[in-house]
Image 1: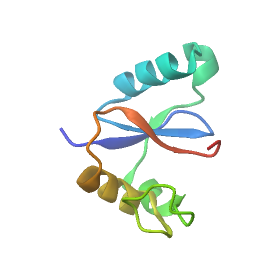
Image 2: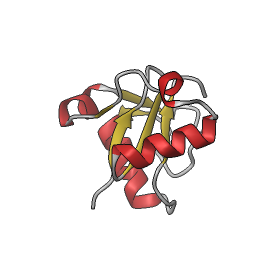
Image 3: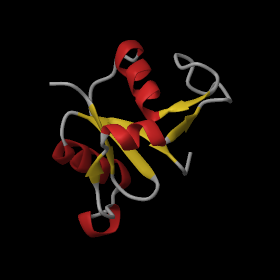
Image 4: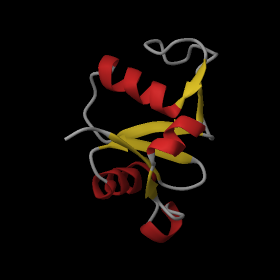
Length: 95
């Protein structure tokens, strides 16, 4: 099964195979309960993946280009170059 991007709230997006495992991991990592943690969580559509911008101009993530790119492009780099077990935090406005 291919990885997908899930919006969990207004601040955090997770990469994983399904919504439930992303939500469980997020609650474990943050210590928040379901009511506190999530605000209309959703799997991102192809259109939203093309519309949202992932900013790595700082080069903080070394296997991604040092530039702004779509979430779709960042996800493709992530899948190809990152050897991590799903699920995990993909992007955040709070980092």
